[in-house]
Length: 145
Ligand code: DQA
Image (tube, rainbow, N blue to C red):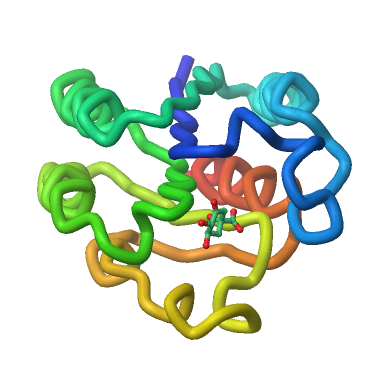
């Protein structure tokens, strides 16, 4: 069975409590449940993780390269400035696997510092602005081969 790693960056463990008017009412546990259920309906195994640590996020991206699996990545604030996360992300696409960058909100409709993504240029694709559905759309795309 195909496995997809869904990786979430800093503050996403606070979903539901953190600015729900922007990020929605679903908490992190609800996100995990929705992703696992959607993965099951698409016939793929989904491993969902969240960290506030840049080093840990990078180690998970390395793991995806070594295991040769596709990734759905919400880099959260790292999106806007982490060249270290970008350098890890590019290894996924260069190794022939797919990396889809997702965001709950639409960063381009928000503060100017959010308009820059240092990740997008090395991602296979980008889905933003649809809340939890941004992730589900990414899983559907990865399941379709
Ligand atoms: C986010 C958007 C980022 O700008 C922000 O730093 C986040 C969440 C999103 O999912 O909309 O933490 O990645």
